[in-house]
Image (tube, rainbow, N blue to C red):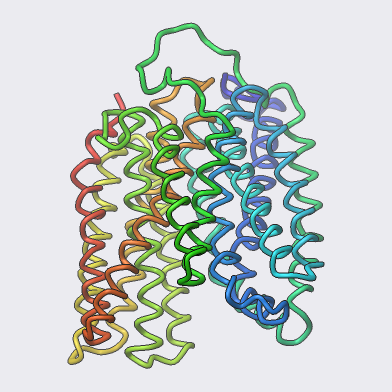
Length: 468
């Protein structure tokens, strides 16, 4: 099915105006919800250390900071499976209600564990919302609008990543960190209600399941919620393990790793690890590109602040440039619909990210200007702006209508796992070199050099995600 209208009405008539208004209203509502979800995910980052200190839970700060991503794995799988069975409206409604409730839970925290629970549940809500919106677009938007709508959803996280942290920091400094959570809960209510009411229309419900034969990757049974929960718990245990070095933390780390090794393969399409053609390759590529980009985005500011002594204002400008670059690149790829093959855009994006990694590594040389590495963030954002929406479209093209929720959840799972895995390996290498007495700049250069591996793999394997 193609949504509120299966074909475009005749130009100039009342039906065409209704057609345009329907999609405009839906797009505005989706964008508002995604925008506020991004704020809830990113704006609280500078307040979490303040909250942890006030709640006497500084040792558990890594758990509070990382459990959001871990929980979004479960939320993505839950939302995708639910959207395939009952349409996108119900998981989206549940997600936005849960988001408001968990923001209030975090705002009223009296212990660090309550704050951790609030952040974990907020991650579940964010995962459900993101997958439900992508599935609604896949089910209901015509081909000519789908690429642009998905690009807009991607860019809805740009402004929160740019403006959210400093605004939240100001509110926390002038008022209270709790006020940020309360404010986000209040702002989320109205657009969320509007989107839920819109999706109650039958034209936005899930398409009927088909009996046609599909490749084995698409015929795979939906992962159970128990498996998704096990992966989320495993990731959270890993985050907790790095908060200390005693036997308890070691055991938690071992248990978390065991859960991930056993259950992660069951959340992804068969053949993902060997980049089987079609959906498995697209899912793997999402993990590789996201892992490389977000690890670069974490290490470059750390380099600028600690080793190169760059003022915070200049580091903030690097984030501004990256946000603009991602938005511009995303807009361009949306305009290339039908002109350039999607897998070629993924290849180009991965190559640009590889170049960005090289720039970051060169930026560690003492003889070069300190802000050389900052340019790597902007260049990498150009690559991700091309690759991320293209991979989403490729994953949907490889999935029948009744399996697009599963495809969306697999992509989000891969993205989150890629971030945690690449970041973990890079951080381990960085700390290992520092432990052996290497200079700070050498450790950074090695961490950046490691990021060439996922970038090159993504550029090489992109052809395997090619749409038929």
